[in-house]
Image (tube, rainbow, N blue to C red; front, top):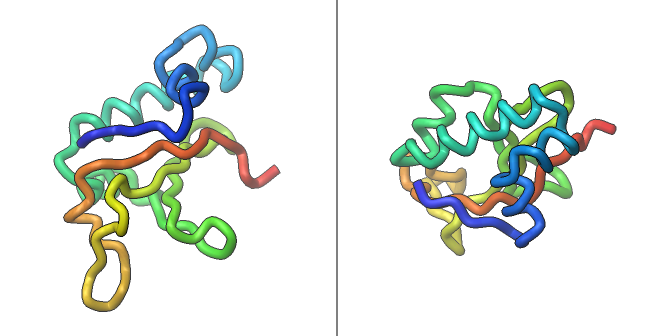
Length: 111
């Protein structure tokens, strides 16, 4: 799957091990790298959801975004790379058709 980044700063966080360890801790950095590798290796987002059942669409003010667990409260927040995103007839996201994602942020939105 193709991975896009919402900003150069976010791209640097995701590609710079020392920066990620500083911001997320060693365990968070390792999980971030693992999730990015899994996204890169997957043909579609549905494959990633199978690997990580807690990967889910967000609601409310974050509707349209997807959350993946990292370490502790940290989450990788992304959205489908296609605009508009592929939809099923019922209006839900068609995870089987998502072949690119945009990383929006790495955050602890529970704080």
